[in-house]
Length: 180
Image (cartoon, rainbow, N blue to C red; front, side, top):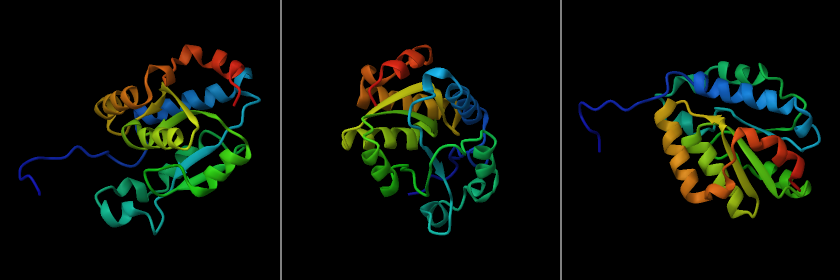
């Protein structure tokens, strides 16, 4: 049912906004530290291909059709890591599930874009398959800005508990002590 006169808040154009760029800069910086040098890393990246539900159901989101979203990832040189493309809200593809199993991954530091959607969904899916999701709010961003970020944080605190929420300042010690 449509509500006349109400405007829905929509992202301005794809994945690029202050919140998401800051999160990606922090992730790229963290990967350059010694504490993270020996840990397995995988990159999940959104691709609005021809079979993406976003093209069928969300025509109003033209930013996802642009090359800018792919270029955003290329700016941060994640080329040393396996990339798992997804075209839905869920980054947990069949290929990524196999990679997690083959590498005996038991914990995942969840970073990235769309705290209010993909980060929440991915964290819950990891939990469901027996992989501990750890979320650092300084390493996630939301194209809906503070409103989306607060909504995602609220859900994550509820579904993951504080035990799986990590401050940025604790990440190096977590990386050194984790038995992934």
